[in-house]
Length: 68
Image (cartoon, rainbow, N blue to C red; front, side, top):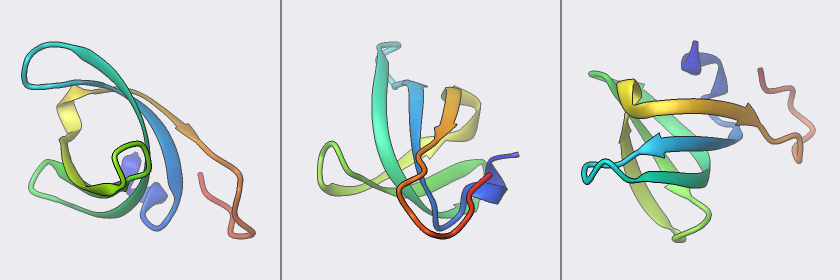
């Protein structure tokens, strides 16, 4: 399901490696081997997210391209 967001900006609620729930706004770059590679707009740096730890996804409609 998240594959349709490659190239899009999304907001996610994520369970990190310390079992802390976090909010991120990211631009999805790729998906492979159960991980999402994205540029985190909160931290202004590339990040990886384990797909199974993503609790919620909301597309952000800032772009002309249709996402989701």
